[in-house]
Image (cartoon, rainbow, N blue to C red; front, side):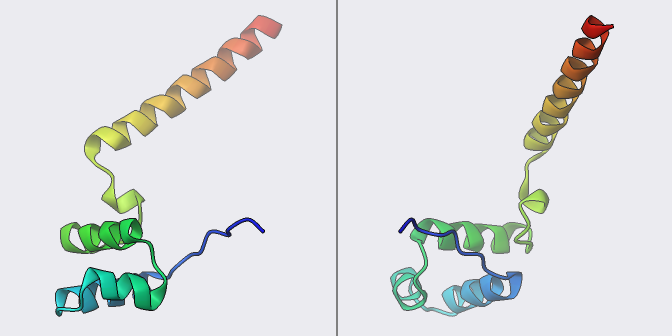
Length: 86
């Protein structure tokens, strides 16, 4: 049976960050709640930098620009394909 991706609420993530900031060890949190170390590390970083756990809120300006440019390229390809068919 393949592993299914689990989702966590922002409230749960905030609780884990607070526990970590109040002295609970990373290893204890990972073991007790069945988390992955990388997910907990990401939540801690997000909690300390922006306070938001939304990926959209945690993107750098370069990442936002890259996404915008990729969408623009995709739109132009579609327009090009339409013009080729005409």
